[in-house]
Length: 260
Image (cartoon, rainbow, N blue to C red; front, side, top):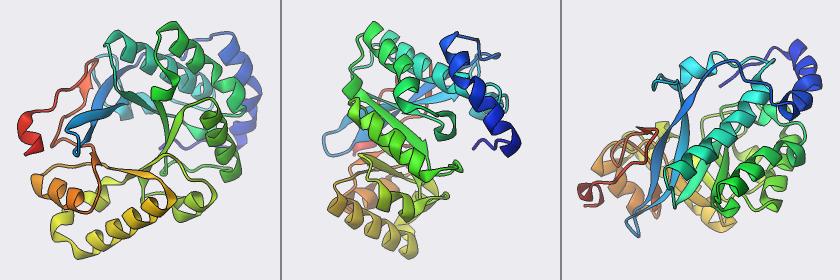
């Protein structure tokens, strides 16, 4: 989560578009690790999530600590381009899930151009790209986030809400906008096979999303017991160390034992 000093937001916004247009550097280096999202029903990889890392594989926190109001817009743009470029270089055939910073997008129809250009340049299908926003990011203007999501859908991208159940928006956000995917926060998944309250909550989320036509990804799967409960609850898409850890500058392979 990135906290921006409110007094600096407008100042940064005034230079955001010119900074992106002029191609100014972010000011620090970063790379990506990719972690699979698996489809347990078909025993295939559904997508790969691009996870920001330092240039030698350092943690995401080490990168995000360098993001400021002065460079957040250029960073968000650079992230999109690097994620698409890396996916194409690795020969990714599945969907690509990219996190974006809602507070870094002022004009979605303009800010999406670099992503479209990267996708075209690398022949990566736009419909294979998922944009996910974390519910943990304190979004200043929920109506603006809805505009971003709808504009992205208009261009053919899929949309997702990450860390659902852990942040600021919750059901209010879902009432205003129904994304293609929600990702259930790992704190709700952890130990779900032995936690009646977590089971009840996840079943309720599953039923609600089924009615709304939203697909669910369960995050943070670490045990076969967690996988089995979620699968029995009707959730096929999962992500976590049980299947594959993030692979720095590479694509993970799922062991046959993960399906059993």
